[in-house]
Image 1 (cartoon, rainbow, N blue to C red):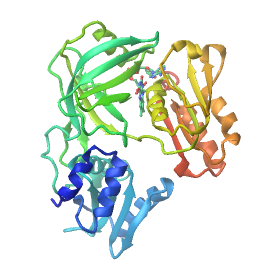
Image 2 (cartoon, rainbow, N blue to C red; image 1 turned 45 degrees about the vertical axis):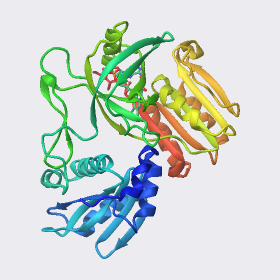
Image 3 (tube, rainbow, N blue to C red; image 1 turned 120 degrees about the horizontal axis):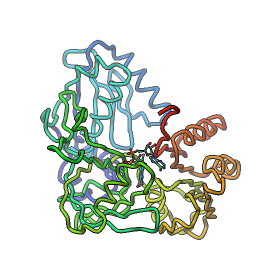
Image 4 (cartoon, rainbow, N blue to C red; image 1 turned 180 degrees about the vertical axis):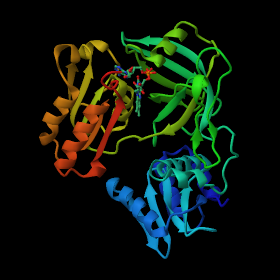
Amino acid sequence: MSRIGPVCRPAKRKGVRERHEVALRMKDLFDPFEATSDLPSISYGAMRELIMIRVKSSRLKVLQDEERHLTVETAHGLIGLRPGRNTEAAGYVGAVDEHWLFVLKNEVTQLMQRVMPEVAAEMRWSNGPKAGSLPPNFDFVTVREVTELGPNFLRVTLQGEDLSRHQDGSIHFRLVQPPAGGAPHWPTVAANGAVAWPEGDGAPHRPVYTARRIDHRTNTLIMDVYLHDGGRTSEWARGHLGTVGQRRVVGVLGPTGGGLLDADRVLMASDETGFPAAARLLESLPDTVTGELFLEAENGADCAYPISVPSGLKLTWLARASGDDLGRATLQALPHHTGSKIWFAGERAQAKTLREALKAAGRDAGDLRISGFWAKPAEGH
Ligand SMILES: Cc1cc2nc3c(=O)[nH]c(=O)nc-3n(C[C@H](O)[C@H](O)[C@H](O)COP(=O)(O)OP(=O)(O)OC[C@H]3O[C@@H](n4cnc5c(N)ncnc54)[C@H](O)[C@@H]3O)c2cc1C
C-alpha cells in the first residue's frame, strides 16, 4: 500500500475535507492510500458511464479522464477507474488514511451491489483488511452517562478508546446495538470489501445518529436521542437512565454522512431528529450568517432542546400538535431564499417532495443538503 508521507500526519486532527484537500495538494509529492479491485464482466466504457451519472447528479469534480484512467473527487476521497490486472476495468479508491480508504471501498462495492450484484460479489480490493475482521471504522463504546434533556430527549455520553476519526467533516455514525440476551454479533468485513451485517435473531439494530459533541481528550461522544413511540433506541437509552457508570458495550460505526456547513446565507429546517445536527451546524456558522431556520416539534419550543441561533437567522418554531408542517413551511419559504444553502432534516417523504421541488426550480445541487432522517412506516405495516 502506498501512503502519504509523514508531512501529512499532523493533519489528522483536521476535518475530512480539509485533510482530503491536503492530500490532493500533496498528491504530486506523495501518493494517497490507494486500492483497486478488478471488475469482472463489465467494460471500461460501461463503468465510466455509470460513474459519470453519479458525477452529474452529485456535481462531483473530475480530476482525470484519459487513457483508461478516471479519477473523481468525492467528499471522502477519490474514486475512479484504472486498467484491471485480469479485467478491462478496475475500480479505484484513494483516501487520506486507511479509515477513509475502507469507507470508499465499502461505498463503491455497495454501489455496484445495487446496479450489478454479480460483479459486486466478485470484487476483491487490494490492501484490504482481512475478511471476517471487524470493520476498521468500528469502535466498541460503553455508556458513561444518560441524562434528561428537556421532556423529549435523552443525552447519552459514550466512552471509547480512540474516537479521533470523528471530526467536523462527517458528523454522523451508526449506533450498533445487539439484541438483549445471547452473545452479541458484530459487523465484519466481507471478502468483497463491504461491511457485512449479521442477519437473523442476532442482527444488531443500527440506526444513524449525530455526534452532538466530541471530546477528543477524554474520547467521549455525546449524542441526543429523541424519544418517540416504539423507538428501540429510545427504549435502549431509557434503560440506561440513572445507571451512571454501568459498562454495557455497544458499537459505533463511522463517521458517516455530511459534515459542517460552509455558508453565509442559509435556509435550514429540521424536526427533532435533526436538532442535534442543526445545533452543531449552527455553532460552526459565521456570526454574520443570515437566513431562516424552521424547527418543528410536537409542541414547538416547549420541547426545550438547547439550541443557540446566530442573530442574523430568523427562527420559527413549528408545532405539529397545532397542524404546522415542516415540509410545507420549507416549500413556502423557498422563493425567499434564492442563492442560499438549503439544509433539511425531516421525514423521508417530506425530503423527497422538497428535493423534487428544488430540482424543478433548477436549484444548484451543490447548495442542497436535503435528507430524510427517519421514515414513517409504509401504509398497511
Ligand atoms: C444522518 C442522520 C442523523 C440522525 N441523527 C439523529 C440524532 O442525533 N438524534 C435522533 O434522535 N435521531 C437522529 N436520526 C434519526 C434516527 O436515526 C431515526 O429516528 C431512527 O429511526 C431511530 O431509530 P429507533 O431505534 O429510535 O427507532 P426504530 O426502532 O428503528 O423505529 C421504530 C419506529 O419509530 C418510527 N420513528 C423513527 N423516527 C421517528 C420520529 N422521529 N418520530 C416518530 N416516529 C419515528 C419508525 O417509523 C418506526 O416505525 C438521524 C438520522 C439520520 C439519517
